[in-house]
Length: 248
Image (cartoon, rainbow, N blue to C red; front, top):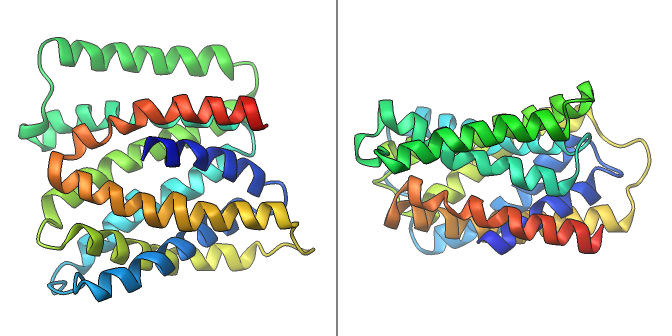
């Protein structure tokens, strides 16, 4: 999962050459939904949704629609490597939110000290790497907000959508997010036909980096919990930096 998600920032960076951030977010989500919805239907994983729609929409906004748009917006200003590192804020936010909303996920002792060190590192990274440019700082903050969205969505899914099979959660969240992200994408249609490279990058981002990756992601949330699941975001930056340096 870390290797797949680490490549996502490279693919987004290629996509923003010819496509708007809302269009990249929409296509990514739509391709991912096209992979997962048929799979979830085949497994009968889309039942038991009665009464859960408000929470499904909330998770879709926090976990997918908003973060995907924010990351694409951020990568218009910052490198794919830095974006991959900043999304590593997700487990830090998860640990902070767990103090108030998920007692079983709370950090204590050295774990809590690690959270504070992580926050300090995040502030330091933003100040040193993008502090001289307002546009880059805003781009970095957009990606950090995406990390917060991932944390909120993970906790909400764990607490309120546990009655749905993990593959069903991933599928229905992506399907709802497709509808939520479509209007902004339609308002930002490209004036000229995009190049093959950006289109292939976004298609790969959707099928592999979203569809397959989210299936793995929700299986992990169900089996080991959101705090441990988000440890993958400590590994993904290693891949993001390597891909960015070697390929961009």
